[in-house]
Length: 312
Image (cartoon, rainbow, N blue to C red):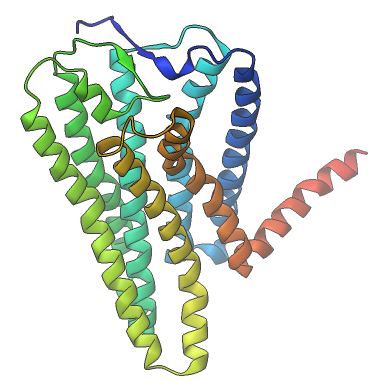
């Protein structure tokens, strides 16, 4: 495929007037995601009492949610609103990179959150000496550079393929679906895709599961009060991890093994879950389960109301 050619999203065809209902729903959902995540980011940045590793990592998760959904929703809403459901090959590669780097970033950040909780629970007296500001900054940089490098290399390999087809049975640019449009041997890129899956998904997940198993073992040997406090801080992270893992597993299973065997509507819902549901659920889980964040959100909202009342 030469530069300047286009890829077409076939699932937008023949939607009729219902596309406007989907556009309205998608727009409201996107605004809610941006609002909740930006609120979490602002609260953590503005409140010095929340400048702690656990909350800083939460803000990183919200930043990643804004980043990932920005690579998906604007394009989706444009395709729903207009009749031309096409995207340039170069832009398609960029969208694919943004969406899958978002997924990889999510897991590495969750890995750091699990590590932070493990240190806090297993070595509470030495926590501040281990999780220093400099060390945390270093970990966050690695958490972003590590998946960025692997996913970016995969995007470059895909961009170099000779593409013969131009029709995608997706509502966004899916890297594996783009690769399947190639008319050359894709063995090498398939092998690299397996390497990326192992390094950016299975290794972080394995570390997270190992960490939480260790936390559970430590809690079982501790007092009831310590166990209650530990579980209170860990359960929200575990809920977020479970939510994202299930969504990502559904997407991987759908794209690799059962693609074309499910009804189109169900396939679309499953394929979008990992990019739509976690960014919406995560800030709500934080707001409901962490009193410090909930209290600061109330304080920020009340402070923003005061100027408006003054003007009235």
